[in-house]
Each structure stands twice: as structure tokens, then as C-alpha cells.
Length: 368
Ligand code: NAD
Image (cartoon, rainbow, N blue to C red; front, side, top):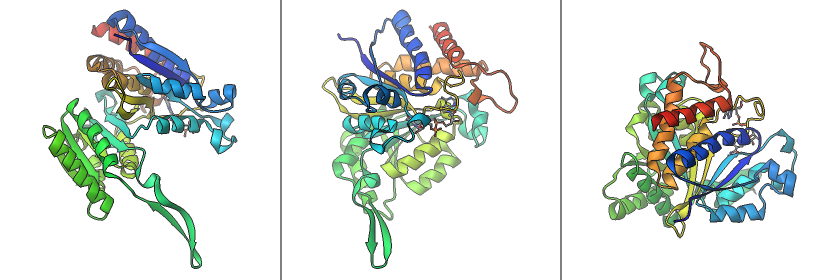
């Protein structure tokens, strides 16, 4: 059987620094677990612009369509701020998401016990939290027509349109149910069916897909505003939350921040299944290129490492190895290792990006 294939696009700023630590884990997987990834590396963002005059070369786009999964670091930086909108580094990332048709955005909110004090909520509310928000990413009010600012009478009117087709709802619902089956088998769907027709359709379609295809998964429905309240009151009641583009934008940021630092947050964006049955997939940390700390060795590589763990679980069916990586992260944190972003008010000596990566690899070894 062919090796699993991975396209690495480290990007700009701290992207290459955090990705270097992921490569150590890829090497560890080959040496200690007998799993060899066919890794290709290429450019995205500002570094691609520097070389090709565009933030994503067509050849790179073609490679992204062929591999089992894409792993991205981060793009952007002050050097590129004055570029024309059409060639800004972020356009490279947007092109990948659009052309791969990545409609399902998975944002886990997982709280490692050692970091529970970092949350703005009480420790007992967040310790051990492990939920995923599935956000519809390619439709809804950010894309619906008509949109624009128009003049009506003697004033301007701003218009955006919330629009969802049944098939758009059905595919993201399936993605959430599939995910739930690999986790706690529970989905809560959130919309505003009390005031929006698109919400009524959303609720109907999610229920239909559930009843026909996933009756074994526990399904509940909640209005999105009540969902926001419940997420801050008692987030551990949830397993998988599925919601639309706009509500997902807000709720996934809210949920992610329950757990503390930006340097800890992974994400996955999934599309339709490919010929091999695996979904098209892009994995990336939630954070950006952090130009303020790039080159200083202060970047926390854990978000990128956990993004790779998501790739192991969702693209490669290596859930056991994903759990090993997550356990290794948990162990180094429990041992008290902290990059600068994780230093509490009590202070201490932070470890560097490479020291954190090395410690995670050592913990993987110790866990075998
Ligand atoms: P940012 O996420 O890069 O940084 C915000 C703050 O968090 C900074 O103080 C940074 O030092 C810190 N931080 C971020 N990641 C960290 C990590 N792994 N370890 C330790 N500290 C970390 O957001 P920003 O400063 O608003 O944007 C910087 C650049 O990144 C901009 O060009 C922006 O457009 C781009 N950006 C890219 C992405 C992406 O590639 N997906 C996402 C957001 C922003």
C-alpha cells in the first residue's frame, strides 16, 4: 500500500519554526512506529510571493489537491502589509480553502489539566474539557447574494444574505456525525430556528440526516444564543457542536478561548471524500505568523503539533498515534514545561520552541 502523503506548507514568521518541531514527530513516527509519510514541502504566503510573485503557485495548488493531507504553519507579516489585496499572503490560504472546497471547519477546545488555571473560567468548569465545534465554512451569510452597500432613498443600506441549501447543510451535518462517532457519539446542532427560516431548514435537515444515516448518534438542538450561554456555563455537557458559518465563527472563538493560549489551538478544515475515501483536508494552528516573536525561539509549537495529531486521527485513521501525541503534550505540560506564552504570574524559566519539541518527542519515546 502507498505511504500516506503530506504536503507541508510552513509559510511565514513562526510557521517554519513550529513546523520544524512537527517534522521531529514525523521522523519519530518513521523510526519508532514504522510509519513513513511521503512528505513534500512547498511555499505559501509571503515566502511564495517573494519567489513567484503570487501567494500560492498553481503547482502548489495542484499538489495540495493530490495529497492525503496538507499541513500549514502560518502566513503573513508586516513586510507584506502594503501589497495589493489580490496577492496578500492570506490570499494563498483562502485559495487553498476555496479550491479544495473545505466546507467543514473543526475547532477543538481541549483543556489540558496543567493549564486549567489559564482559563478565565473557574478551573472545575474547564479542567478536562474536550469538545469540537464544527463550523460550516463555505456558505451562509459571508457568501450569500445579494450583498453590498446600496442607496435607498436618501440613506445607505448594508445587505448580507443568509442562504443555505439542503445539500450544504447535509454535508456538514454528516461531517459532524462522522466525527462524533470517533469521539463521544453526541452532536448538538445550533441555529436560530426561532427567528430565521434558514435556521428552520438547518434544524430539519440535520434531524433528517440523523434519523436516516446516524440514528446511533445522540442528537440535540439548541438556539445559538442559548448555546453561547451554555458554553460558558458548563461546556463539558457538549461533545461535538455543529453550526453555520456565522455562529460557528463566534462560538468557535469563544470555545477555544475557554482553554487559554493561542499557541495551543489546532484546527482542521475538511472537504468531500476523495477516491481513497479520506476527506480533502487542511490542518493548521489557529494562530498567525506572530511576527513579534518570529526568530526569537519563543513560539509555542503545540498548536501545530496538535494539528498534526488531528491529521493522524482524521486523515490517516491513526487515532492511537494521535492519542500518543496528545498524551505526550499533556505529559510535558504536567511536568511543568512552558513556552513563554504559557508562563503564569508566578514566573519561572520558559523553554524554547525546540526544547518544547524535543521534550514532546522524549515523552513519546517514554510512552512506548
Ligand atoms: P498572531 O496569531 O500571529 O499573534 C497574536 C499574538 O499571539 C502575538 O502576540 C503572538 O506573539 C502570539 N502568538 C501567536 N502564536 C503564538 C505561538 N505559537 N506561540 C506563542 N505566541 C504566539 O496574530 P496577529 O499578530 O494578529 O497577526 C500576525 C500576522 O499573521 C498577520 O500578518 C496576520 O494577517 C497573520 N495571520 C495569519 C493567520 C494564518 O496564517 N492562519 C491567522 C491569523 C493571522
